[in-house]
Length: 616
Image (cartoon, rainbow, N blue to C red):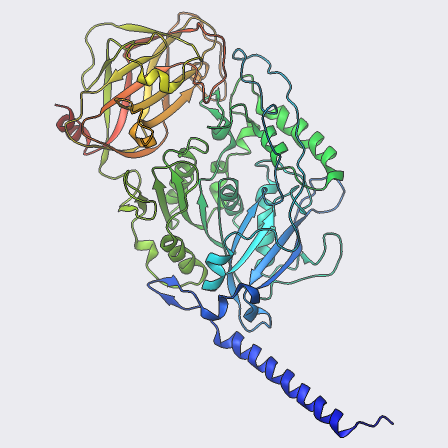
């Protein structure tokens, strides 16, 4: 028989009472600590503020695909950050989720691994070299993004690494279907599906017992693309997304109207380069992944010779997958993002709006990135994840940061484009090698003007030159009052080329060009566009040009919303190779422009009347 001393009994009872008291306190904390709301927004909860008390753990979620060829369904590495009050099941909270191919590191210096752009149009490019990614990061923390912003406000934050990156199994595909199905699988687990595991290869299950099943997603650039990818699957638990500067079509990212065009700042990049850049998954699967996807599916599909739109590109265009999209959408982008261009967000916003979904769009005047003000994001997530009726659906659909305002101070408008904007067609008058005219009336004379391609001159060089044989420039009268452009300008040009192929580039600029180091990009660039004249009839099939024959080429420029100040002139600049974006053929190609068959259509707030007041 075991005998207990009186002192031992006392200590045992004391410990028991202390344990029960701690458990009771924990339970009380979990029931008394709860989200609360003010002005339609989730507020900081004192009990959720201390990061030292947050629970952080990781797991693997099984998907519906096997992309690394091992005969097993790929599992995604997932990490969770949540208030400790959720641990015992009494408190459940909604989830804000970000997924990325970047969390475990990327390839370093890409100099020398990009495609060489110095060759003739249609030529076979030189082979390129391939970098390797050294995986970084520690378990269980995949990323610290979002946590300090959202966990104190009563949200759980979840991160996952994309297929073939970090500790996630599978292979990158850069826009392939697995990049849509991977976040879908994670969202389904968050909504109660039994597909979570404690290890990448084991059978021990883990459940998201702390989740309400309502999920929102956000992220910037590639991390903003993946919420759209997930939403196109129609997964029920994904209630709202806030993509920031998302790439919504890899064709529109790496091509433009049939033209091979690089994203700004990354001359010579293409889908296979991005594959190499993010391929941080386990080393023993990389050879299979490289052969199957980078050197197989991708190289067989990207077609750097023609730049035509094909089945490969169609499968990486999320606009083609909008049928099942039902998440509420708050979109954000910069009008001067020349990496992921502003059309990417507008095309998805426009499609979601046409479906009758709750939508808002936030545009600012800067470059890549730039999320909406916290208040906008908070109202969006509060409405659709907590189901708080805060009236956000009745707020203006469009929020535009004006040229001299801070990004957290957008101006609301009924929609984008501004409903008060109407198209105004402008015609070209002779003198483009110096400065022709941009006017409301078509010239009665038959005029043809010539530009000579030379990539040695940058767009800035050409726009600021008083005279150049390498571009054609047509300018409006000096504006007597501000002129507000809102929407998508388009160009219709009648041209002939002395060779079977040519680059064709268009810049809409505000002149005189400002050389001031403090000048904002909006002081000079209004919008831009690029096209392949061989694709005058279709982006799916370019045909060699017959030298000297005239073709009608029509295409849109990038979306914009900009107030051009009084004292400036609007300049339409036509040139061939764009040093920052296109291939670099040898100089000398001639493009002849028939001014009588060429026009620019501008969406102007107040329409023709506003243009007349500003210019006459």
